[in-house]
Image (cartoon, rainbow, N blue to C red; front, side, top):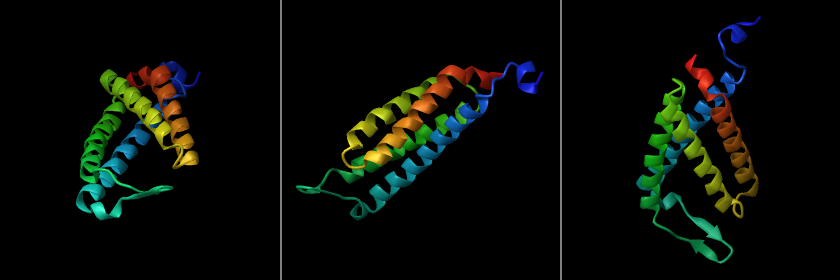
Length: 134
């Protein structure tokens, strides 16, 4: 018998760790992206077919900072196997996947990659998240 079988852990514990790292990195990137939008709002703009798409960059930046902090804290807490962190991580990954649907026209490949990673994160946490507590 291997060590993972004797301790009641599956090989998916590594994937749950992967999910925690992905959520943590997503949070850190959101904090950076939001900070750039708040500090230097001249750096963010979107050019569409009909011209320049403008929206409140400062509000969007603060939203990214807040979400980034929540993501980073959730990623750290997920390593402990806390139930609330697993629930919050699934909610955040679900919202991320849904949000990517809106970005498919602008970035189709990137959106599909992020949706696939979000689905993997959700699967790892929901099916094998309890293994972290052992």
